Amino acid sequence: MDILNIRKEGAMYRGNPIWVVTANASRARIWTAEKPAAPLRPVREMDAPEARMHERELTTDLPGRAFDSKGQGRHVMEQEVGPKQAAARRFAKELARTLAAEARRQAFDKLYLIAAPSFLGLLREELREEARAALNGAEVVEVDKDYTALEAAELRERLPEYL
Image (tube, rainbow, N blue to C red; front, side, top):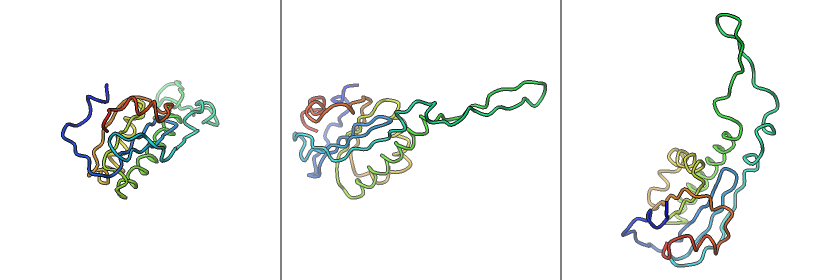
């Protein structure tokens, strides 16, 4: 989805900085633009190294086994949420808390939330629970792309001319 098509028409610039967050399950970068046409400056970087690890590195032993209630059947007990998914959820919660705290401080009026599709869903859930009230005054634009590897100039080229 193109970011230009998501932008709300008629949204007014109120003078506070505009924040751009690029994120995936293991890394988030927060950028700011002082004005709608300004270049991006880095604000903060967050990292979740466990989300980059392999499942076998995150677990210490094999899943447990259970017997069927009738008969001789035995099967492996599966986890509802795997270790990588749990790490991604924890990181989404941490990022949501950070954004909520900054929104309460009125650090920004508009937030571009650009995240890998699977992580964007987790982040949406956490923002609903953790930060929605704090973000009420800010306009939030969501884009399902993973731009975490882009530097400021490259990222700015992919955003609208006027944020």
